[in-house]
Image (cartoon, rainbow, N blue to C red; front, top):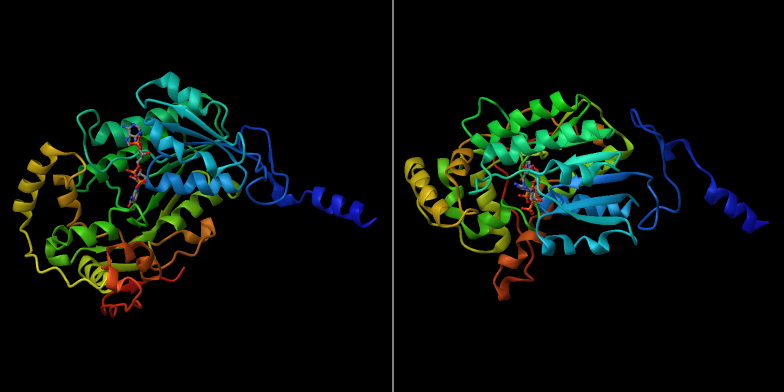
Length: 359
Ligand SMILES: NC(=O)c1ccc[n+]([C@@H]2O[C@H](COP(=O)([O-])OP(=O)(O)OC[C@H]3O[C@@H](n4cnc5c(N)ncnc54)[C@H](OP(=O)(O)O)[C@@H]3O)[C@@H](O)[C@H]2O)c1
């Protein structure tokens, strides 16, 4: 009798197991929660091989979602294998310029995430082709193939009037994606931190380039896990046609963040001078001609731009964003010397101007 009862309870479906997507059949989840669950969704994550993409695929895999992971480099796609149950992670080679390949990657999916973006130019892709033309093409093909939900990851500072070409390209992408896929959700995270970030870890190695503008530029750093969770939550609670801003909970200056990195790593503060903007841009031009991921002139421009002060939409995605101080030691311990490795963490006092937002 007990066994029968358990079978009935486990097999019972609740209202929240059903998600109805526009123009498509209902998505019904089943099974026990976790790795071997079946969320009922089939999802494509373009840009999955990047910093944010890997955490998103891991979260989707844990929810029992079948994820198509388009990749350009075989080695980059290998790490996805253990992120989902057998057959749940489907790797597909793609080229953003090839419409057939894009269609192949998304034509069986009910939801498409586009995380493709590049904050520096290469010889094959300039800012516009990587951040605007490519995403617009994906959105157009997704609409043609009858995908129900399109989620475009933009940037908190995307603006057509920004002095940064990267932010301009991101803003234009938002418009073109909306034209091609009117119900698309636009997600705009702030600068993200985590193990593979270009923020805390870069500050620990290259403090000189964060002293530009005398460290006065103010940003709203957000934990990559929080953004990945927000994106994953959009599957169960879609926010069609909305633009969701996801800044970190506090507005902090580069000066404070450099102080934080120095305190947490127990390394002395950098005594490097403040490089004038023109010199930094000239240096970046030379550096770019040697190797692309080096500091780019556009990145120098971005280091002078304060993050947008727009309010966060965390309530809509059911996530409470965490503070950078909570996680700093996790990502920065590797920059401590061997004898300092186990010492307790002492955080610097927050400057009076630091703004913490309540969500
Ligand atoms: N990181 C941040 O602080 C931050 C803040 C706000 C918004 N965002 C946005 O969030 C998204 C993800 O950021 P991220 O930090 O994860 O970026 P990332 O680590 O640089 O990853 C970018 C992804 O886009 C793909 N990609 C770039 N150019 C491509 C091209 N020409 N063709 C095909 N694929 C291409 C990359 O593929 P490969 O691995 O094959 O190169 C990679 O999967 C981006 O749109 C970014 O602009 C990032």
